[in-house]
Length: 112
Length: 115
Image (tube, rainbow over all chains, first blue to last red; front, side, top):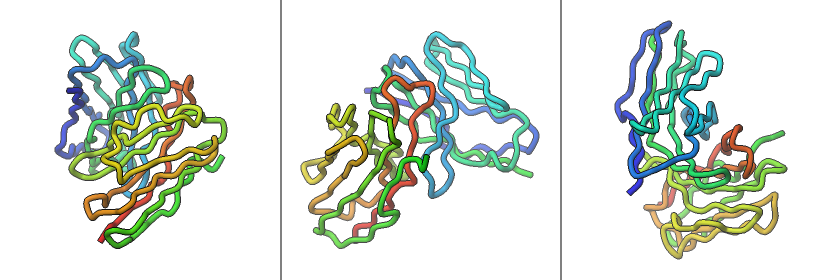
């Protein structure tokens, strides 16, 4: 069955360092991979999308890589700040308008 | 734009009662999704619509759950009768079918507690 794995343990990173989160998937061939941020009591907020034919995408302090051979995406936050503390969700989409399948997310704590 | 609007924000009901959750998607979006989130299972897709038509309801737990989208600006998720195991946060999300560059926009969710 389709499976998306994110590190279930919380990640603690010192302020100013780069935080790297991992998303692995099996039995899936997504056309798109998305990353979302979720704060307590709120809905997920879309951050970045990367297509299967793209290796890397950047947005301000965020960088996402997508390796379809390894079936893995890495999500980086550079120069991390305490305000970056949240749960980050990886999501896969087969084609435009299709349902998206979410990982369970990784909780990130940026320590001042 | 006010974003995706869900109501109510919180709902506490007794087992056996009917519960109706409401969602107003972003104007112009033509896909609508209902998700349920729990600590154990994460975000699970229940059902989604394209152009008001249900496309995939394979995630609906059982016949107690039903969803409708009578028009492009409104959808409901109904649970009848409700059970304690239905307690979760229910999210509605909307998107443009061809708007994959923009991701999916989620509402703030409805926290349902069935006692």
